[in-house]
Image (cartoon, rainbow, N blue to C red; front, top):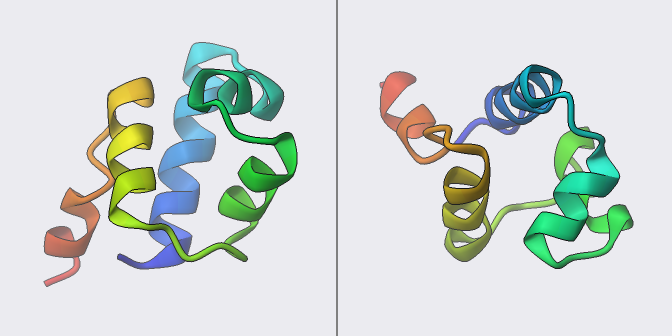
Length: 69
């Protein structure tokens, strides 16, 4: 999955929900620093993390891979 593509999806969805990165961290039960790494593209997402993001934000993170094909 292109890091910039999921980063944009996450940031756009946070804006739509009017959530902060801190709120997302709380929902995902991870540190705010972890979310910062995700949205800055400095974190390679595990499948588990991608699925968790999809479920919490209701956005298709994994589909991004297929969209780029």
